[in-house]
Image (cartoon, rainbow, N blue to C red; front, side, top):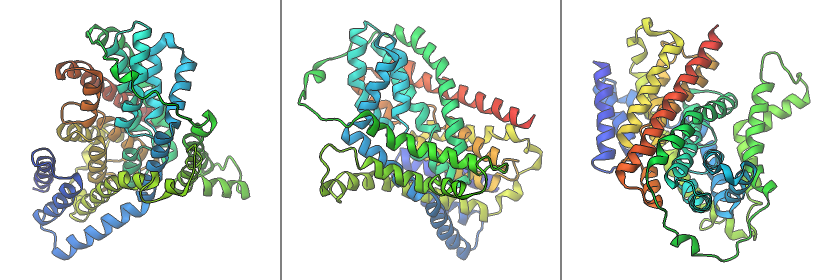
Length: 443
């Protein structure tokens, strides 16, 4: 019956979000309590699960999400993300606009939310596709799939950070493998855009490109890259330093790397570096009504949703669900299908990749050991499998789908034929790569 209770709780959560437009935090929180009561947990244990689940998860990853959002907000507001995007396009060349938009979207979406990245980059995409006489639908979907790939697979985007924290996986390997998997997974998406999406007849409107031609002073390329690159490098270096073989020795240098490469310290440094991005820095930037205050408002819902997911996970753990999982399905890499399909179903049902990542990771916590996923490597692969599932299917219940269709002029049918199908290709390819990597580790 315990699996039936999980399905009932998930159904309540999904219906509350979709049909009644209830905030995911409240839906997850109440759904967790309903599950606990249905599972026959004592009231005292339900309360204990709420406190331990909420506090435990936020103690590990609340600050990571906050610092990641601060970096993204300052990059977006200052125009630093725009500078990075333009430089990447210049490196790739205007003749390769489709590839350029895909790569630019992937890089921009690491620190910046997907909707914001598309809103910022679509005018460039529109102009370049027109000047290069390229199919606008193809360059647009190349951009959206690039954004989607890193949004679900590469920290410090909030979803992967939350899933990593919930499952206790190291961020360094997730960044390393997430970057490789998202990059390779975009290859079939590129050919999908080039040969299939290019057949969609979409004529861009250019009125918005003529508006707002006032001079804007952007930060330098070096300043714009630093808040993104330095934290990622520090986190990866710390992961290398922590290897049992001690590649950096065991002296003061290793101690320093392990400290500044701790995700909290690394992202805090990234946040401080982002404070150098505004052209005119004044105290208002860091005030409650300034950019920092706006970042806090953006981060708060994500942090609360993550905390509610932690409550759900602790409720599942304390209900004894692990005892009900058969050891017969504990074949490591095959068990990765469970988080993948669960996140896939949740994303398709309610539209949010972050909610799908948090909910799936929370459910997986008590199942990691019974499913043979409790090694450090398999924790990383579980987070990535969850992220791969949370990519698809992006359709009419996803805010990003509407941002893409409305700003590009696509109708819903065209959006389904291009972006929605593209997310399925991206998701499936990423999962296939994860299975291959896992098989390699097990040889």
